[in-house]
Length: 152
Image (tube, rainbow, N blue to C red; front, top):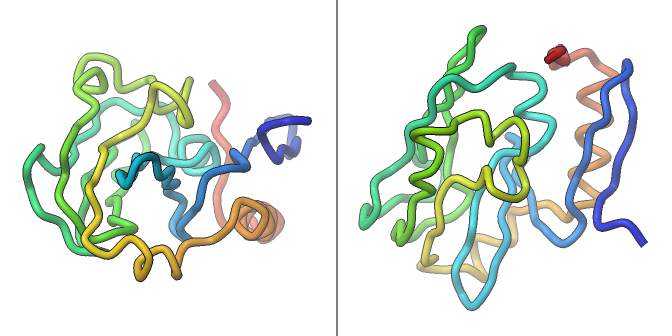
């Protein structure tokens, strides 16, 4: 059985990792041992274009749910990323400073952004979407033409 929901849209393959949770604004959350690893979805990286630069909240900083987690700059846009959880940033993916393209090539693996120790994981998680719900949301965005897919 596949670890992804996937579809092909306009010759592009898009994937949604099944065991992760998602925000409506296209971030994923994966919880392990009480800590939440956060990244951008395949859909967001594909519709934003090639990532040239990523800036995230610093290690040790405290962040509020829906507070600014960082920004992602591409050739065509700058995307503000909003935190799906309140908590303290305990780790930042420092590899992205040298290799921001990992957000495009491995958004669910090496391209993660930060790890947060949540203040209220149970409460904040109530607003997160299941993979299946996010997949349906993504398909709706594709059908409505909300995001243009980028060739690479």
